[in-house]
Image (cartoon, rainbow, N blue to C red; front, side, top):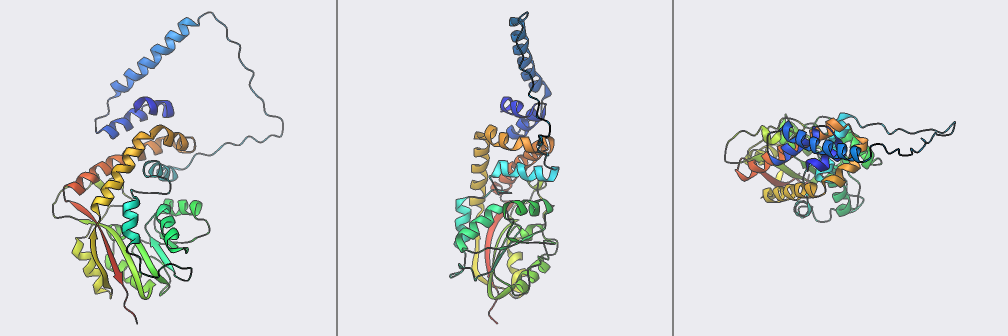
Length: 330
């Protein structure tokens, strides 16, 4: 892995990332050893060609008036998005896959498809949006609180309605939505009851809210390493709290909660394995446009964090659950 990364990046960022990936302490000596091997090869080649003159090609000089385009490097925040997509796949800010998508779409209300049905998404990513568009045949309103993610939506879905605001106060118009899907909104919302009130207000009578969220398990332990790369420090609920909050603001349970921890873990494992197998090709596509240092740091933080998060799932510290709530008919 180090050799492939060195070819792409140069410097010691390759060694640091490989150490993160393999769960080892970073050792500059190992990096220096690879560098020494490269230096030896170069020296050997130089010795063989000593005294031989090689004709050099003249540099091409652009014609006067020819514009030479220089592609600007992405900002650090945009480079973070590029790193996430390098790991999880195009349009993804986190792990997801067919099994998890199927679990969610199985919760869609009957007759939800059709252009007349209005739906919203909160705290998701472009891949989730594409999944819903394919299933429902209509265009969602995207609510986003992370500025770098909002910028990415402007690139991937420029014609869609995008509204920005606080996570616990999503600015959907009152009574405008037939369906809303949120991903880890409770995990990162400061005011969880306020979030539920806003979603309830945004739905039309009979409208439904599909909730995919991370909650605490029965075991206790330090979760800081598992969320070190998260967008904010999570404030996780116990599973019962989410249902209690939603019922307290007027929702009724449309479908009992469902544990999808196994689907999230499998999606994570599959994505990380694929990333390792396709490392060179995936990074070669991204590196020319990104802030290289920021990009490599994000790769390290994200992969390390999710390795810890997989352990947290396995150790019963956290779970992933789905709920479906309904706003009663008027």
